[in-house]
Image (cartoon, rainbow, N blue to C red; front, side, top):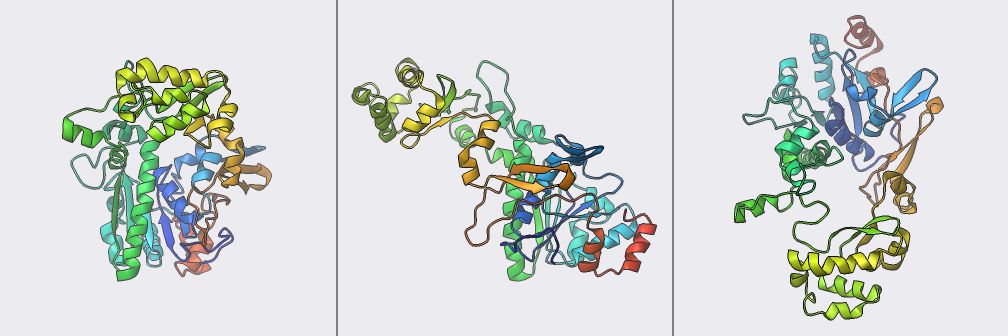
Length: 409
């Protein structure tokens, strides 16, 4: 299927995705597939479209506005408005599913079944369909029907309890990691299921839970508990046991310093003009330096003394290529960093009179079939006629009938 939005074939050229999801976890997963060439069709209820269309910030021109939040996670998609509360709307979706490869949704489990378009129904329409369902607690289990947001996953998955400082209440991760982690696992699961479907003709349900996804990001917390009984707690800017590996003050802000191995520690001692420190018998091995008492009493003051008199830029210049030492940057500094541009991680999409939107690019770099992230997002139901004609095989008369019946906007 060709359209004016697709600008490059991509690794997923020919894959058709029906994206019924809303807000972040599902839309971002579908956007990742679109970046790599899949034809992604955003299907929204015209009476209750994706609520993120109203999220700030906005591109504006006069009285017109368009959500940059929505644009960032729905770029490169075709838009169709469809009322699935009607029998005709259900039939339209089934007709689209016949030619599709993936259906992606992030409703509470059972919602699609109530509408008559759950996985059990759609696999009868198209046995090779990959049905990816993202939810808070997953499609199975006693908690599956519970409503969930990002914070739900951070709380129920254990991450919230591990974040912050030991003498204060736990702190949520600043980004919506409950959604974003589910996004990544949804993309991986969808691609794995697609490969199986292409090889065998057999589709399947890809069941992604936000809580599961967060739990899988807790590093050693699970085995620490199952092996030793230790319960992970907040450690502020320090690692659980690796030291030095944290934030340090410098002349104009803070940097991360992580020269904890013997090789890196010796290199740092030389860089900062104290080579004799590397041979101090109390701290000459990593095992000695990571001891909490030794670290706080002796190692940490040494590192703090090294860094205090230099600016972030000076430290990165003198040590950044030798040891893990990185300026802690705000998002403005990240966007404006020449290194960000070198990696094509800021891309631009032209929204005409609304202006140009600069947004993050695609972090996955493929040498032969690169992504095409610098594209606009769809307006509500913008491509309905094109999609229904090319994918469902409808003619103009049929589309007019559906509009007259209120199935299409």
